[in-house]
Length: 263
Ligand SMILES: Nc1ncnc2c1ncn2[C@@H]1O[C@H](COP(=O)(O)OP(=O)(O)OP(=O)(O)O)[C@@H](O)[C@H]1O
Ligand SMILES: [Mg+2]
Image (tube, rainbow, N blue to C red; front, side):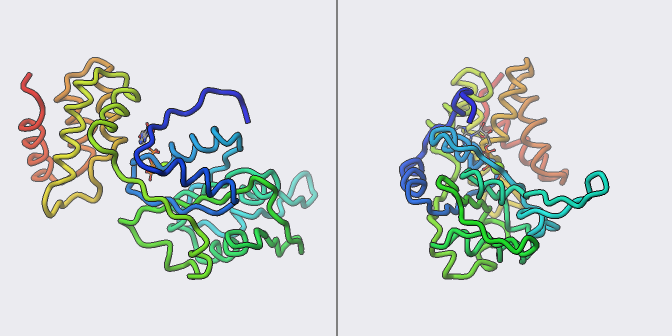
């Protein structure tokens, strides 16, 4: 681990205590929450606090177990085994963060099972070897409950070994603090963005695929820090980002006009 600065993470509930306890026991963690609510930042902060390396794997639909475990590659005419990120984490005792495993193919869950339960083992068929996870190894899986559920691919017996932590968009005061800090803007400006974010989140029967996340609010705040007016920033970073549909964009623009302070 490098001695770089701790990632800024503002705790919202008891997630830090729960993660610490799970880490002490080497228990795997299931992180749920909508996009842009702070899952990645939370894991980065915890890894830093615990002094562990963090190995992140972004799930995608073509991801296979070889992408996690490793494969033989041809190097200078010779075939050599190259560890995948999961195997490296198992050997080094790092935190392995599988981001959006929902996307991954079924065979990836098969390698996860024995690692997630009391065995803490990773079997590498192609090497004919079974590794026991080094002290410090911890599996963290994230998923967005709004999408298809990863849980259906995970056996109930394994699933029940995961400690579940649910994150959501923070309450107004905390989110304001986060947006002000991350974007480098005045608290009052951040408060206006958070107010708009919450107005969008509470739209009834929203046709939006995603709501205005903390990330989007920070993005808009960043544009304000660069000198754009609040309205222009909101149009560019939030309103047009959330939808391509003209009608919806217009309606969101009107909502923004109603919620944001007059210029
Ligand atoms: N509690 C928090 N403390 C500090 N910063 C936060 C917090 N929550 C969100 N953020 C900020 O919001 C940004 C987006 O959060 P992050 O990337 O962690 O979201 P995520 O849940 O991992 O999203 P995705 O599912 O899309 O990967 C972070 O870069 C950080 O700036
Ligand atoms: Mg993330």
